[in-house]
Amino acid sequence: MSLPHAILTALLEKPSSGLELTRRFDKSIGFFWPATHQQIYRELGRLEASGHIRALQPEAPVRGQKKEYEVLPDGRAELARWTAEGAEPRAVREPLLLRLRAAAVVGADGLAAELERHLTLHREQLAGYREIERHDFPAERTDAGTRLQHAVLRAGIGLETFWVQWLAETLDTLETLEAPPPAAPAPSAPSAPSTPPASPASPASPTDPANGS
Amino acid sequence: MSLPHAILTALLEKPSSGLELTRRFDKSIGFFWPATHQQIYRELGRLEASGHIRALQPEAPVRGQKKEYEVLPDGRAELARWTAEGAEPRAVREPLLLRLRAAAVVGADGLAAELERHLTLHREQLAGYREIERHDFPAERTDAGTRLQHAVLRAGIGLETFWVQWLAETLDTLETLEAPPPAAPAPSAPSAPSTPPASPASPASPTDPANGS
DNA sequence: CAGCCTTATGCAACTAGTTGCATATCCTCT
DNA sequence: AGAGGATATGCAACTAGTTGCATAAGGCTG
Image 1 (cartoon, helix red, strand yellow):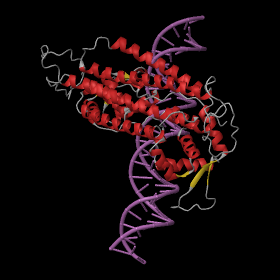
Image 2 (cartoon, rainbow over the protein chains, first blue to last red):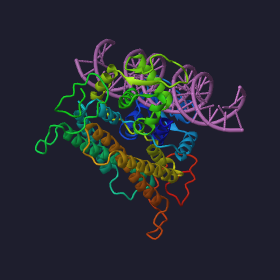
Image 3 (cartoon, each protein chain N blue to C red):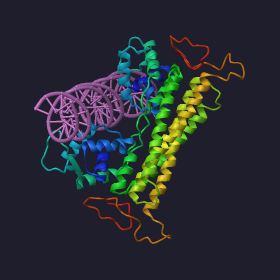
């Protein structure tokens, strides 16, 4: 149950409407807890129903009209309770890693291009984070809240830095797999091709030891 | 739709029963794509129904009795197709980061202990990965499949290394927040306490600028 | 042979996240 | 005034992941 607490945090930072929240999510909290506007509206409804937040405009449940929310004492208490609560770290769940694993068995065909693409994306994200850091956290020596927010941003920077590095490294590995040293020893039998152990439909091109189709 | 493909990969590496798969997930693929035995059984049923895998024992749908599966050509083809497919990187979704963000607004009360706990967990995980690396990937200079699997493991190592580092660093930050320099300047007015902007129930202990409850 | 533990398979209900679409208001341009 | 786009709220259906529990077979032990 993280989304409602993310929303409470955002609303405490600044009372907002659903769309405003969505936009702010897109450029801060959403980096590590994305949410669509549909999710946010649903959750706002629940939070209002349970008395954690309330609309600023007392009467006006009109459909296409802006509706701003603020956090009630109950909501703040709930957020404080949740903050002190413990939870196990989340697993990674990055399909790209699964694809590598699969490629180890079934052939690494389109993989390099995909790694390249991710590398670009992560470089961009990293640049974006650095920009935010430069802009919002210049001197250090600030208050407690800001320091904590900075720590969160540093997590984003650290993670993106990791991905950029790992992707570059893995692309290297992939290249040496696809083009074994052309100047070195004999390129006749690169190594034991034990990868595709039992399967039909495996042409096994002789120029590519990684490949099963 | 990643789980079915994770299962296909695992089954290609070695035909197995549901429970065996579950155990193998727990110590390899599951590190970056966890799955419970219930999920796995359900998915095995679907994969069998769609002709991607089949049971090795032709007749014997007995309840408490082992049932092993192998991948069919169709399943291998599907896995190859999926491997070449592209997908956006997944967002992080780590509630701990949300908690930090919340703590910036609502007070960092139980946070240090929680960070400490995570630090221990990540150190253990990192040690586990290093152990696997030492044991399963000793010399390098191996075949393509193994190199790819090693790359995946390196991702795990890199991520855990990042977390260990970031948690240590953030714990430091947190300490300096909770105990401002006792030998340095005047501790009377640490800095602008703009953190809790609008809220009731905020005692604001004078010894802790980070705290709102 | 009865009881109990381990191995093994599986259903059902729930929760959370995703996707597609519907609809209302307000503002601007013609 | 009417058309069209931007702003804004929201429902509904679907998909995927989680949790709790039921049940059967097989082996070990008193």
